Image 1 (cartoon, rainbow, N blue to C red):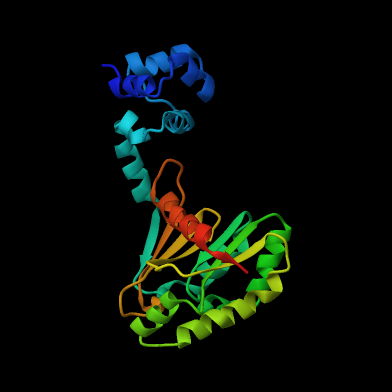
Image 2 (cartoon, helix red, strand yellow; image 1 turned 135 degrees about the vertical axis):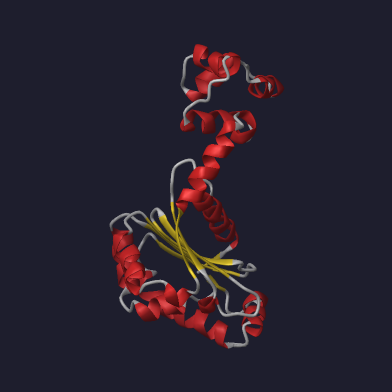
Length: 243
């Protein structure tokens, strides 16, 4: 068996076994074995090779798909039928134990600040210690927030909640490393990321976010789900407006 997809991708990009090996940081004979013996490289080498060739790693190594599917399923820690079912101690634990990243994408997320009155101070302390803090709030003057408020039956109250959350955050915004942006995207999920844990709160048409399910994922290298949701976060972040 040989990996003709990898061979063809190298040729199509005008590259060689040597250039791939140099980019990835392996011996050319290793790349040759990937082709002639259909060996599957380690994860880092797969990602580096796929990126260099502009190809999907699953296309180059189809067996990876099954591995990634198994890993992605394993990322799901638990499911809560509504946001109120998420234990209060879990929110507190995730906040307290986050050391590198706290990233939140919401329209308002006021419940989190109401339930943790010291959250702004905690975020500032974490940023001072080197953590990256990125908060995306709905722009209270945007059409999307107005529309979502109407859909949930609370009208302008959603915009008011977004303004209150921003006010709660204000003390932390003078700390380098704490960033706030306003967004006007259609929000399909609220996202709460604390290091390698992420809580995803899907939005259901006509229902307030608090009445909708929450899924708790934990990152596993090579899995897809955690990274997939963070791509969504990054998409919104790039289009957000810094305050």
